[in-house]
Amino acid sequence: MTADPVEIQWGDTGVPVSERFDDPYYSLEDGLAETRHVFLSGNGLPERFRPGFHIAELGFGTGLNLFAALQAWRTAGVPGALRYTGFEAYPLPAEDIALALRAFPEIAALAQPFLDAWDRGETRLRAPDLEAEIVLGDARETLSRWDGVADAWFLDGFAPARNPELWEAPLLTDVALHTAPGGTLATYTAAGVVRRGLEAAGFTVAKVPGFGRKRHMTLGHLA
Image (cartoon, rainbow, N blue to C red; front, side):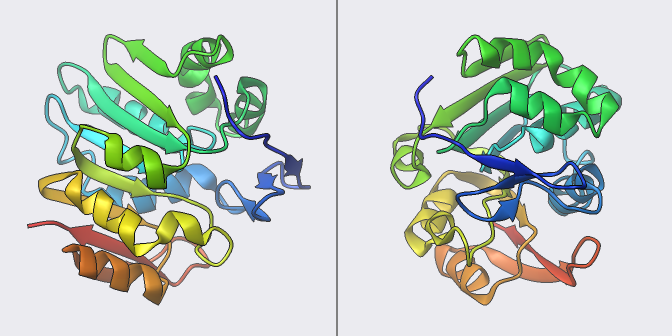
């Protein structure tokens, strides 16, 4: 596994904060509840799950969104494997991911087999009900070379003001080009530059209530 160095801080709440972007990896209030509100419910999940459903994500981070989706997939009892592709430029080591997920015991237990593989340097994570790949590198380069399409996108980069590269219009256009007809996206941010970029890429965009102290978030749908 090759990647740029990652430096994180652990605040009093135990939430990891990126030193590079000065931004937490998930909500200081309740990261798992945020994931379920923003990325699962925001994409109409688990109701839209079907065999072969494919989730893609900009910003794998601690893997919290992937493992929450897998937990929902298992609870829903969908046959076959959930497909997932994450794009990550600054992957965390397995020990830091494990420490971050300790706050969510049911997710931590579910994630452990995959963290063992991650610690061995594997970027393809497999189970009878999961086919996951983490694509390392700058998404502005790697996404355009990806030959897949997603049914749902989790746009979970660090805040646009701190990590603008992951919210640039050309990258959002690439997201649209790699979205299946009728596909959706969800993100915690309601920044105007992001909404305009998504609209320009062809998504129908809606601003809806956000999680916790965030008043709004953004949803998108591709006809």
